[in-house]
Amino acid sequence: MACSPQVASTLSLPAQSTRTSATTPTPETIPQPAQNTPQQVPQQKVVPKVVEAARKQIGDAYVADYVTIAYPNGDVPKGQGACTDVLVRSFRAIGIDLQRLVHEDMKKHFALYPKRWGLRRPDKNIDHRRVPNLVVFFKRFGKTLPTETTGKALATWQPGDIVVWKLDNGLDHCGIVTERIGESGLPTVVHNLGPCLEEDCLSAWRITGHYRYGKP
Image (cartoon, rainbow, N blue to C red; front, side, top):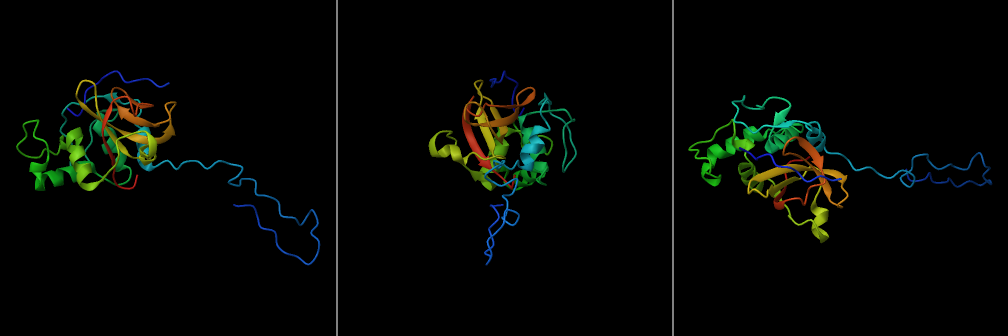
């Protein structure tokens, strides 16, 4: 299985330039400041499509069962899934099918991927739904970033990034980093540990991976 349910931690125009004139400007001719200048309205962070797609899964039940699915672009039943399914569905919002990409890479480089499940060949139904397999894939084709959340490393955490944890029970877990900042001062994360939630939990478990893939 991709990961196992566990109680998650709770979280609580620049101003118009004046034109030079040979005559003294009257109040009617003096340019007025724009109503929505950057100085008046704080700029909002752009929400990547990956994050928007992740949020659409909030409330989904945690179900990590093996399911025979279509290929490519196969998916488990709507309204349920595991932590890896959050990633798979989110990246499909930007045209990236992790099911196909992981399967194709495993067919060519099977020896590079973990064998802890006793598999002798790739399985397009489940390979992309296992955290260790995604870790290998992101290390090979994505950008590996710092796992620390303090000092200069904090600035490396961007919306759409992937975080991988080692849970207290020893299992692997993953989520999508958002543009929102929680009370901890760290970005919130959308993840499914039963049910799918957006939480201030980036530092709730030991971070073992931080990756950036595609253009979130």
